[in-house]
Structures are given as structure tokens and as C-alpha cells.
Image (tube, rainbow, N blue to C red; front, side):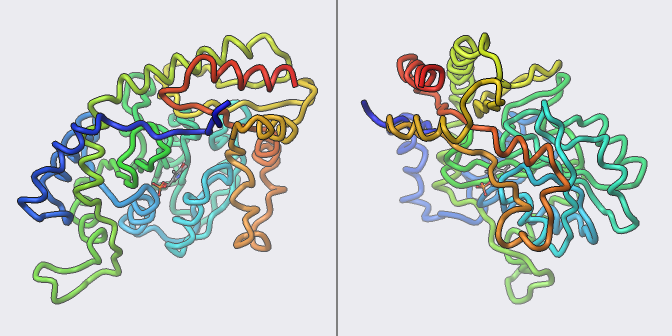
Length: 366
Ligand SMILES: *Cc1c(COP(=O)(O)O)cnc(C)c1O
């Protein structure tokens, strides 16, 4: 048997990518807002239905610079059930993350637990659409309006998702996306930000380019380098042409998994939330005691057959060693319990039905 990986990047046809980058040998304009970057920006803005949109070198820098551009201070209410990037982006901006627990079916921030965490120092809510499951945006944005807080969504998982007939990119003040190789839509490395306030546009472009003033002889802001190269942009331009096929293939795979798992007790599958158009980015399964085998036992059985699955997200970000003695995961018990039980199964567009069955057979019969 060939090994089965948890994910496998989709690639556009080789010739198509070559065509997209051919002109670079003539122009020699390889980065710094080149024409491919501009074209991809326009296409993504349209696809996402974003009022304003900018590309970044990766999803992390998009988030980090968006927090900086909003000038946020004090405390950000967030969740630890996320990729390490979300928490790091908050802390690297000098903000204190205040960890709120998650909802046990959506895996996203539990709005009922936000208000007790608000203090006079709270400036923002940084919430994550985990696995592409939209947060309870209505409830979050109601609280934010009541207390005058900014809302940033880490939408790294939710490219192509819509909620109540509205693109996921249209919620909150800002939504940031990751176009990393492992994401549904990718540019190998890359990221983007969709935002409502058009005044952020110049500010973000500025921060993305070292905070340099025109002419390059002065910097009036402490910026970073977070530009997306033409090679990466070309990958995005090609991949975007296939995005609906990509999502459809993932849907078929997810539905095959669903069919195999749905009659078993003790498994929590992807939540059915009304108004959500999914992108099938991940196939998370939560294993409860009733199932008879633990998440970690299942990982071991899969590993014996050369199949990788990912404990995503484990550990919680408030358990990472850089935060261990600073924050306490006991305060987010639901997040901690899910982190101990969840497993993301292999899922990529060209996964075969046989491969899905091999994975399912091991999980159900081992
Ligand atoms: C992938 C990811 C990021 C970071 O994106 P990069 O493009 O890898 O920098 C941030 N948040 C979440 C939830 C992610 O999954």
C-alpha cells in the first residue's frame, strides 16, 4: 500500500503554470505588487465578495499586520482551539490574549462566554472559523457593537465558505485567509485580508512593505515584509480557475466518509449548521468513550498502515511551552476535551474511494 497523507496539495496543470510565469523572464518584475499579484488581488476580491482585499506573504502575516493596522491595544478575546498562528499574532502585537471557551458542536468561540471576559482593557474579539465552520457571527457582532470592540476573524480555513448567503469574507471588520499549500485554495505560501474600512488599504500596503515612505528614504511605521511574489501569485491565479471543482471533489470524499461513519455511536461528525455553504477543507471526527477506542489508539492503528491523520488542534495554544506558565487551559474545559478527542482524517481532492475505505476500515474495525 502507498502511504496516505493527511493532505496533499492540488496542483494546476503544469503547462498552465508555466504560461502564467513565462512573462517574468521578459519583465524581470518578480515581486513588489507586480502585474500577476494585481490580477490575483482583483480575482480574489471578486471571488470572496470582499469590499477591500490585499494579498500577503502568508496568512499569519495577514493577521499580524491587520491587528497592527487597527491599532489594537490591551486585551483580545480569542480561543485556544486554533493553529498557533492566531495566538502568536495577538501576542506579537503586544496584546494579551484572553482565552474564551468554545462551543462543543461548532468548535468556534462560545458567544455566551464572551461577555464575562470583557474588561475596560478589551479592544477586540479575534475569533476563528475552525475547519471552515462559521462562528456564530450574529451573536459575536452584537456583543462587539454593544461594547465597541473590533472583530477580526481568522478565516484561514474558510476560503469559499458562505453563511446566510453572504461570503464569509464579509463578516466582522476584517477576515484573514491563509493560502498555504495545505489549504483548500493555495499559492504555496500566501495569505490575504478582506476588510470593510477602505482607509486600512493604504495602511496595510505600507505595513506590508517595511513601513517605507515613497522614495524609500524613510520609514514612518514599524512595518514588516509581507509581500507575495509573482511566482506565488501565478500559482494562485491558476488554482483559482479550478476552485469549484476542487471543492466539489472534497465534498464527494466527505460524503463518502459520512456514509461510512454515520451509523456508529460515539462519533461526532461535522456539524450541520443551517445557512452554511461548506468548503470541505477538513474532515474532523471527535471520538467519545462510547466509540470504544480513543483518538490516540486510532492514530496508532492508522500509523501502522502508513496513514497519517492530524491531531488538529492539539495541544491548545494556551498549552504551548511559550504560554504554559502564563495561561491556563483549565479555564477552557470544552476546548481541552475536544483537543484530546479530535482527529482530522486524510482529505484531499484526488483521494480515491479505495483510500477512503482503507482509512474507514481501520478506524471501524481495528
Ligand atoms: C494555516 C493557518 C494560519 C496561518 O496561515 P499561514 O499561511 O500558514 O501563515 C492561521 N490560522 C489558522 C487557523 C490556520 O489554519
